[in-house]
Image (cartoon, rainbow, N blue to C red):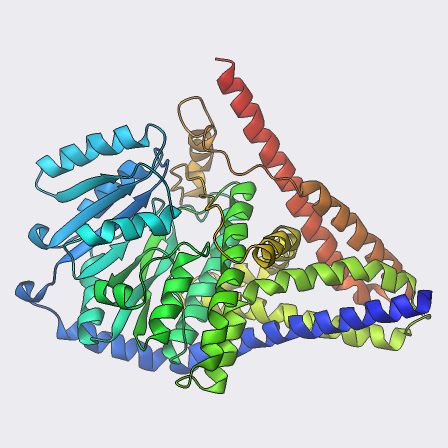
Length: 519
């Protein structure tokens, strides 16, 4: 019986390893596609920019700013939106404010002042938060004057030339539904955590988004820092809240309707990155749940499409199910110790090294993508290479968090609570100013202590997984050799680090809240 259980566990481990390998190998494919198409795509963008637009040809644009309890960043956002270099008589701004705190009073005051200065800006309030962000965007559309709709989340600071840089691409292609720009990072150097997140985000935008867009595959609007054609939104069925990633959902629905999308890799829209790991984990949970919900909703339509070829369908499947990587990693972690202890019963050591090699090849795929993304944008790719073990560790350490999110999507394939990511107004780029910015960002009675991330409840499980993986690493290394336990060592370090940092950040926040409430 024991041998049968071990063999079943070994079979599951092999299947999970192969699944992880598929996603890892696809990272190499995306890198290759991005590098292959890059020069032609950049030349095409240069030609469209060179054609230019006269002032008379500029269309009317509505900029939508969905806001919910953003008192720390909303003033910065409103001023940046009004600073966009575009004719005022053709640029309308909608502040879609669902706030339940003093943010609304702050917005009303700033909007009144900006309106008096000649800006076409409106403060739109709802009596409910039905549909969350998707509901707010949909609610503002009937009153929108613009032919094109720009969207910015509260943590973004759009550059002044954003509209002039994006609108020409929508006008050049009447079937272009949206233009997405690359995310930048206001507080990249604030901490090691924000730097690692920046590298991960760059990998997505510089490699994944570019490869899919330039190869003619489906890719997604990232929810912000982009411009939509209003008629395309309507044709695709509008914003809906039946998934937690309304942006991914609408992107695919529009492209399934025959619309095309455009990606601008060389135009950067900077934003604030979560500096608290619990806020980061909350954001990841929302993205993971929403992505799997979109997979259930959209993959049948993708696979039935007669316009898409086999390669495009496979890429869409890998794109929509990307967060399944985390359950696969968690499966490998849980099975590692019993399989190591059962060596010689269900299998012999000759199978150990091939399995380790498969997993390492899979992990090196995303690592290659991250290094290439830094090199392609003039970043410090050598430093990124040195940070790669930490980035892989954090990615593995998120496996428990994101697996729970995937399980949530499997249980509830429609909707759910949209938990916002708290923003505290960080924009520290100079390491010399780091201490001052840390003090500014620390929770206090009048700042951010009431914008708490969802309390982390799984750090204890992450610590147990770290100990579990470390035990398997020690046993395997002693039996087969130190190299064989490398992946398990990274797993142990990743789960332990994420668990400890989650605990420390959570305690820091709770202490600040208690101090605030005692005043």
